[in-house]
Amino acid sequence: MAETTHSGQGKEELCLVARKRLTLDGVIDILTFDTGYALVSTTLGILTVEGEDLRLEKSDVSSGCLVLTGRVDALVYSEERPSKKKGLFGRHA
Image (cartoon, rainbow, N blue to C red; front, side, top):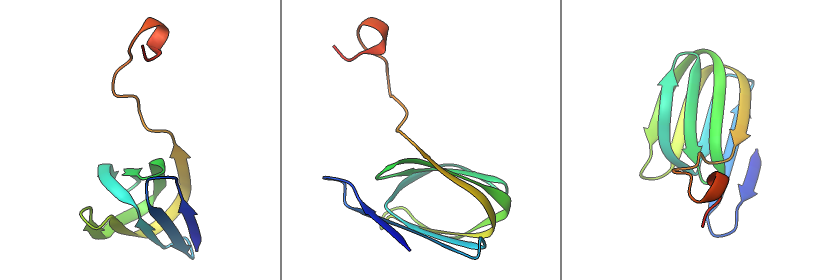
């Protein structure tokens, strides 16, 4: 089980069992979900989950918990999407 902490943003745990069950703590919001793709906002950034026959077994955003089942092919973290570009060339003023 991978366990990560990010300063000031709490604890995030990700557990993938046999590529068939993904348990994730630290969920802020589920941005997109279908049977082949999920985009999840977490305390450590945006998590993209790709796979087949993905199903939401448990989704409790208030407690930050998400459980997906199905075949998981890829997990990719990226930074938060910028809300608005400000200043010259998108830099914050």
